[in-house]
Amino acid sequence: MTFKRNKVPRAVVSRLPAYYRYLVNLEKAGLVRISSQQLGERMGLTASQIRQDINCFGGFGQQGYGYNVAELRGRIGAILGLTHKYRCIVVGAGNIGLAVSGYAAFRQIGFVVEALFDVRPQALGYTKGGLPVLSVEQLPQYLAENPIDVGVLAVPEGAAQPMCDLLVKGGVKAIWNFAPVDLSVPDGVTLNSVHLQDTLLVLSYYMTNPAKADERSE
Amino acid sequence: MTFKRNKVPRAVVSRLPAYYRYLVNLEKAGLVRISSQQLGERMGLTASQIRQDINCFGGFGQQGYGYNVAELRGRIGAILGLTHKYRCIVVGAGNIGLAVSGYAAFRQIGFVVEALFDVRPQALGYTKGGLPVLSVEQLPQYLAENPIDVGVLAVPEGAAQPMCDLLVKGGVKAIWNFAPVDLSVPDGVTLNSVHLQDTLLVLSYYMTNPAKADERSE
Image 1: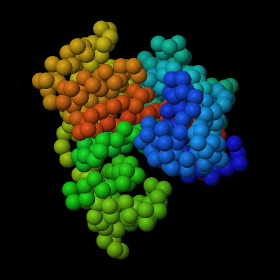
Image 2: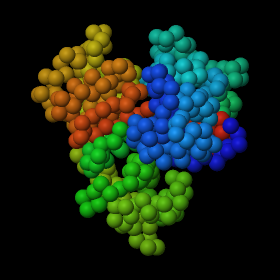
Image 3: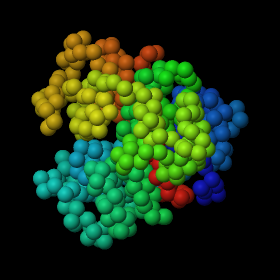
Image 4: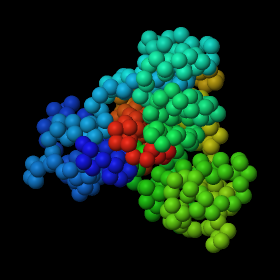
C-alpha cells in the first residue's frame, strides 16, 4: 500500500471512511459486486468521481464487472490502517469520553480503549463497561508502562493543550480531539479534531439557505 | 444574504464554520482587523483561498486593509443563520445526547435544547442541567404543542430512522443525526449526520500514511 503513499489528496482521504462504511454495509447485506454507477447512486457521488477516487490507490475494478465488494472493502480498510489493533486511552470521562469508550463499533474496527483518565475524584473508578477511570496524575506513569497508540481528548477547552502535551510527552503518536480548540502537536504526531459545532453550523446554513437537503457527512 | 443563495459550493460551506470559529476567537482576543494572508496562516489555507471563499458571499474586504474581524464574523454568522434562536430537542438521553444537551456553546450560538426523549424508563426525569427527559411516547404530543426547529438524533442505529420519521411527522425541519446510519428525509427537511467513526478513520489513515500532520477538522 506504500506505492502511492502521501500522494492521496485530502479530499479523497476524507471520503474513504464513507466508502468503507458503505462497503461494510453492502457486504453485510450479501452483495458480491457493485458498479461505480450503483455505488455512486447510494453515496451521492457520480460514477466517474468514484472511479477517480479509487484510482488514487491503483484502480482495481474490472470494466463491465464493477468492484468486488469484499475485496474493495478489504483494500480500503487496509489503506485506512484497519489491519491491526490500536491501543487507546481517553482523557476526560465526561459524556463524550464515556460515549467514545463505550462504543463497540470502534473496538470492532481495532480501536481498543484500555482506560480513561479524569481530574475529578468523583469520576474515578470504573465505567459501566468495566474500564478503569484513573486519575490524570497517573497518566505519565501509565504511558511509560503501556505503549498507547491513540489518545482521545474529551476534556474542556482549557485543559486540552496541556493534556495533549502530556500525551505527546508519553509517546502517543495520534490524538483524536473533541475539545473545541485547535491544538499544536510536534511533527510526527497525527491530530484530528472533531468540531461538533462546525457540523451544527453546516446544518444551520442549509436550514437558512435551503438547497437540496443532502445526506452527507462532514 | 439571499443574492447568492444556493450557489455556494458545499466545500466552501463546509469551511464557513471554521471561519466563524477563528473569527470569534480573534474578536475575543481583541483583534480589529486581519489580512487574508494572516487569516490563511492561522487556518492552514492560502490567502487566495480565503479571498475566493469570502467572495462567494460578495467580497467585503478592502485592498490593503484586510477584513474587519467583527464585521466578517457577523457577516459569516448571518450567512450561517446565527441571527435567531432555534428550538431543539434531543432524542436519546445517552452519553452523546447528554453531551449535546449540556454543551453551553451550542446554546450561546442560539441552539436551545428544551427537552430530551428516551425509551428507557430509568433515563426519564431530569438531566444534571435541569432539562426534562421525557418518554418517546410523549414525543408526538410534545411536537404538536411545541414547534421545534432542530431534532438531534442520538439513538442506536436501529432506532434512528423510525425516530427521524417521528420528528419529521411532527414538523421538525432539521435533523442533526449522530446515529451511524444514513437516514432518508423528505424534501424540505435538512439533515446533517455526524459519523464519528469517519473522523477516527481519517486519523487512522494519517497514522498509517504519515503525511504532514494537519490540524484540520473534517
